[in-house]
Image 1: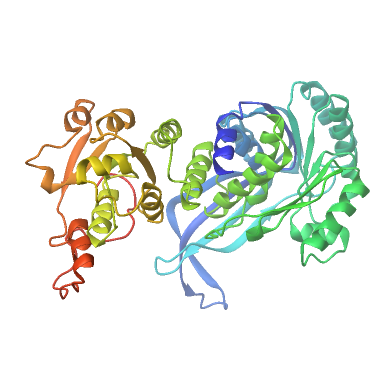
Image 2 (image 1 turned 30 degrees about the vertical axis):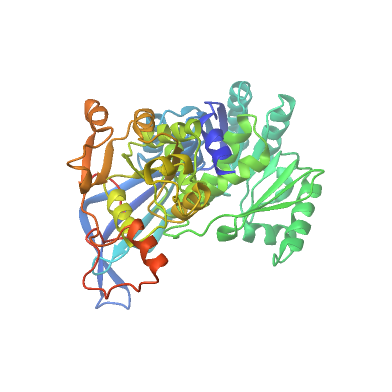
Length: 518
């Protein structure tokens, strides 16, 4: 599944997507929060100089996410005249991101929604929001503004592969705007995705293609308490039938999402556990990815699975920060390896290594028989993995082991040896080779770093000349003294106990690298 999703990310293309909704500007003010005010029982935030950031929120966040993911984006919304200059600042940031802003109308007497988050750090620990201050006008935009906005939508909607309605109940997504946008999109055969607001009148979303409420929003809209898959199904069906939707996608935080398509059984789309740092922006990320996948003509289950990945990556960041295609590919590659998909054919291995190199990651190669895996092997592989980002292990086939070691070897078959190696976290990929040397495999992989044991110094390292010819390097690592597979086999045959331990392995250390060159 993971490699299917990687292929999907790589072939999403650059569809044009319209975003209709409430535009917002986010501001972050950072400082130290280490004391309580003598005037009141409140924290004092000592603002750090020149540490003030602005970002895009609401529909602007969705548009920015889509642009970061490679879509062409046209945004439709309203900016106000106050706080002074904030409307122009918002439009400027959208334009800087490459978003088409010709669909934005300006009302001088209206507030541009501005959310100022004061973020404190105590004793250099993790950042936490201390206070949020909002400038906003949530009254519905006047009819004249609706007409101008709808004219812009009708003019620029043709050619879009999808439309997102991002409703934050700030007065832009009125019933008229919502219904007319859905009507025009349906006439043009354009799918419409709605990211609803908890307090919105859901009737205005009728006729959309997909609605993407979270757990809380779903419970409010359906009056069904979501406790299990059966209650999720009831709630999703109530929304789907009541609003004439093609599908309902309910986000469930760490549990993933629930997808119900019209005429099909519902399915729970699981997500892997994440270290949640900040939930802000996760919903915008989810609907952006779903819109991109749908606009690319791919099925909804694919959209839901990829949205899970992107939403998970978003909550691992502080604040609203877009997720890139490269980040999704890196995450999916990691999931594929964690899922045990490490033994690769030459063709698939080259494809994956190309992806890693596209992420500027360093490829490390080593090889061996690894028959009867022992502590020396583990220490060697741990040390090899610290030489870069991705460790590929070339594994001798049974035939080549017999040619090198004699008819009594290997003790374990190539399938067994590969499975044991694959269980090691430090090993990223395993490639079998049938020759007595790995020269051909090294030439195919073109590693950045070639690793062998220091006992090869005198014998000559196979592949050294080739690796160094294209700017790579060769590393010779010390071996754990007094241990080898041959010795272990002899001890087993003779029934000899292990000698008392005197020192730790020469190549010991952390079980997993942090990445990058040492």
